[in-house]
Image (cartoon, one colour):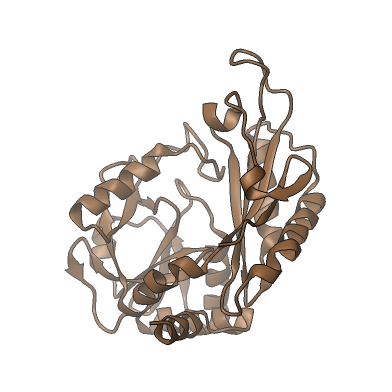
Length: 305
């Protein structure tokens, strides 16, 4: 892989040249982050992700010293400087990371923000994701609960969420390839560690209310597309019982858009996987971005075996 160019504290430098102080608040408390991506080398939904990044910054009283417009322009410049390294089938995730900054010593307040904006290639995960698109994933309920909104608002996209990692480890103790589903402290379905969860029952698309979940950009886009396709949608309280009785389940995130679920807590879902509604949303999203993401990934993997 090439040594890509990133934006770090006001400069465009190689990723290998980034140096983080041991007194940076990234290490002490974490930071705010967000992720956009390109489809077919075209940035999509970056403004929405930058807007959400700034919502999180404001909620935690972190001043970046940049406006949303400036941050978006920096994103495009980082993308432009690295686009020559993209293979025709590859795409970038653009990753934003902002902390309160470094301090002169551990007990001193930060002197200013630390800002890192960089690109991540998607090609290395194509083989795994192509298989998941075609065969579906195993979703397992973790015992670790999502942090209650009374403690940390789930709308804040913050790096310091060890409960997410714990949930993923728990799921993988059941099945090394499993993905985790997290509940809130009242037993309602919340979200996955880094993704939203949706289900279909009797042709109706259901998704948890955002009591204890981040409202994903992809989730919101798919709900809008579902309505345009004539699919009835509802945000409601959902429980494990509901997921056991789902006709279809899928998860959504920016990096892969939709992954269908083939098994829930070891129980196989009705065939086919992906189901009819999931496939309909695949098609609608692919039309929106101008590329069939599943076909492209699967074709690439077959051609390079």
